[in-house]
Image 1 (spheres, chains in turn cyan, orange):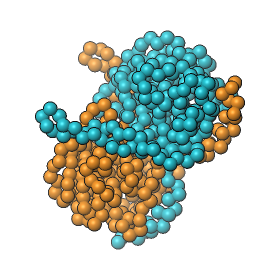
Image 2 (tube, chains in turn yellow, brown):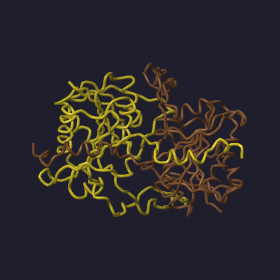
Image 3 (cartoon, chains in turn brown, purple):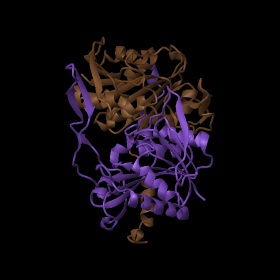
Image 4 (spheres, chains in turn orange, green):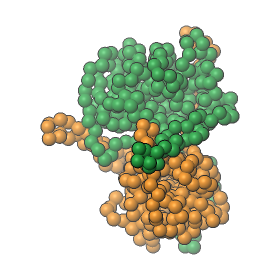
Amino acid sequence: MMKILVTNDDGIHAKGINALIHHLGEIAELYVAAPDRERSGTGHSITVFEPIRVKEVKVAKAKRSWVVGGTPVDCVKLAMSRLVEGVDLVVSGINHGPNLGTDVLYSGTVSAAAEGIIMGAPAIAVSLDCFEEDPDFEYAAKFTCEIIEMIKEKGIDRRTILNLNIPALKPEAIKGVRITKLGVRNYENLFEERKDPRGNTYYWLGGGIKEEQQDVDSDVLAVKEGYISITPIHLDLTDYRLLNEYKKYFTKDFLKK
Amino acid sequence: MMKILVTNDDGIHAKGINALIHHLGEIAELYVAAPDRERSGTGHSITVFEPIRVKEVKVAKAKRSWVVGGTPVDCVKLAMSRLVEGVDLVVSGINHGPNLGTDVLYSGTVSAAAEGIIMGAPAIAVSLDCFEEDPDFEYAAKFTCEIIEMIKEKGIDRRTILNLNIPALKPEAIKGVRITKLGVRNYENLFEERKDPRGNTYYWLGGGIKEEQQDVDSDVLAVKEGYISITPIHLDLTDYRLLNEYKKYFTKDFLKK
């Protein structure tokens, strides 16, 4: 049976991860290592200055589960180096809210999946495109199972994260699946300026999504139009286009100027 | 005069950023927005649940400077949306310690530069390959100025971060400059398992760098061999290789199974 490590960034008590565990538990040997509280926006951060507490807990349908006092990336790094051997797949989510376009860089959900790749296992990040308070994660969890069945059959590239974003629609209203690229995601009025009770200024990150021109195959557009978006994400950040161009600038004499 | 925004992840009091400010102040109109304390390993994290405090301070050679109670990415996002208009270039560093290979994902220094790109300005991340306590940042700061002079002359791609790693050697011992790609960077014994005074287990991130086979043009190898490494880094995480392959899997009937 496939060994799957489940994590998220909304914390172990979130509804999204529990829907995922409920369904994945039927098709895989499940291990859970999730943050003790919500850790949204933590990106690829790791805890270096503080110790990390780990507490084993019982979670129905999972073989073993741990609550981790760290970031989503800490959860995956620690679980794969100390707690579970031979993880075949990391599944991160289901996030309450989308992870689209440039926003994947800030996303604890996607970064936890990325850490799976770094630690040697392929990975899936799953997000539900919904900002409302108590969404239904059932369909998204079932769809994730279908993707995993497909991976069992056809394989998956070890260097690639599949980033799933699922519209919060009734199953029959979902139009289909699109394989997409990361689209454009910018915000306006990013920070609110406020005054504290003593009259000192502080800022709070907020901001509304800017409506922008999207390519036909953008993830943002797919979800907006009612499709499930699947983006293959890689971690090779070297800009090969520019390697040769810059090589011309740095001749042997550059340092002697 | 070029408008440069300087930030780092070691905090505003670190020696590295102050060496940078000292030298960049001679060639540019300088703005500083740096974290109030060390924020290493924060990756691309942003502060979403808490307000961010900003305090204007006087820093010699900078036109205006702010201490920010947030992550390096917060500093750049906030400065470019609220504090400084028309930033031409973001310079992040000089980090105390290298930022090479996969480690760039965890790096607050590189992530702050990445945020520059997202907010619309080209960016440079600068790190000194040194773990000793009180290194000399002078040469690294001067070299960064040379790179900026080159950028003024030849331009820089707005979507690319230049990731500089400078060996902690005497200037005359540095062998030259190599344009590199991100190399392999893995660790062994990642977490130390310890007991607290009550006998409970906790973990602490540590680990030694694994010596691994590197490509000739790897950043890790360049620095090891005494060269300054410059890697162009992009943020386009879509894995285009796999887009078409995966498209074949998801025919119109996939959802109807």
